[in-house]
Length: 367
Image 1 (tube, rainbow, N blue to C red):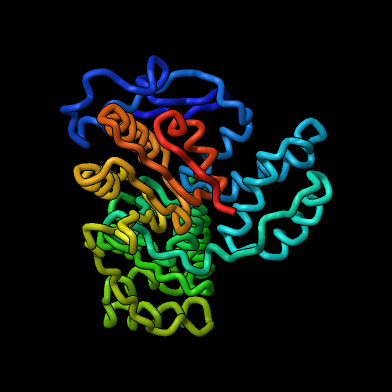
Image 2: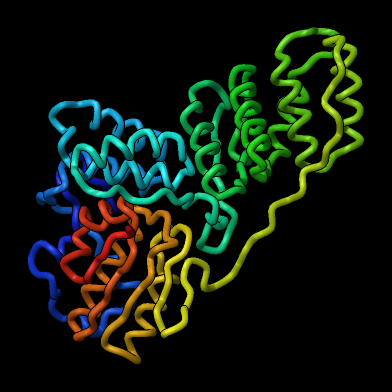
């Protein structure tokens, strides 16, 4: 299992010995992916920026943003261009124009150069790549102890415009946990993010046995049960419970509003496309190892020695996928293939530095 670096750079172990690993000619893409290991080396971008890169790669966007803003407020890092560049790109990736414009003037003044232009890179963000609607599982007791996981659901949904919450492993819920989840679902729907709750049957049975008509307690638990029935399409049970809710709390219950199930997207080439001129393009987000995406590079390498990958629409790559990419590119370089990753945003660029990808490919940043 790959362990993200905390302070020093983590690179695949093959990179520490040589940028051209021996005896890789016969390795399959699957075997390349299995080679990812971790060693401690220095990157030159600073341990704090390394940490930011890994946070973003793992989908912790708000934590990454908070750490970058703290770095710029620290006099010891204020003249370091890396955190400035990463923060400006993070604002573009998350559509925060006002924050971008507030910082860009300081950037131009401090470094005496033209800042990057504003571009809303979130507006064209596709739904999650890799073959399915993104899903996050909740397990055990739904309580305030799951607050971080619930907040991660919001991050995942905002980033992908759709999210499935798997509740099959929840054994029970309390009122506070129910309120937290309901608030997260409401926030996502206000942002026009599609939300679906799956695996609700066991929790519906558990909560139905806990409520008592006429006892005006655990209001959020009642509301969660109504939400679960809507997601399960159980309108008759919903209507009965809604009447009991009105009697118990002396207020109007939520209206029946069935939730459309999220279908599985199974496009085999999700995340990668072949553009005019024979260039590959990475698109959206690459996660879960990226085998289907990086396999296209291997296929193209059978036909040509120089491969250009347009990364201008790539928003994020997770840590495991970056390790797989390193090993794939190492193999190709050993075969005399030259790969250029063009137009990489600063957040992904920092991760590629962490993983040593610059040793085995040419990388150019996004303007």
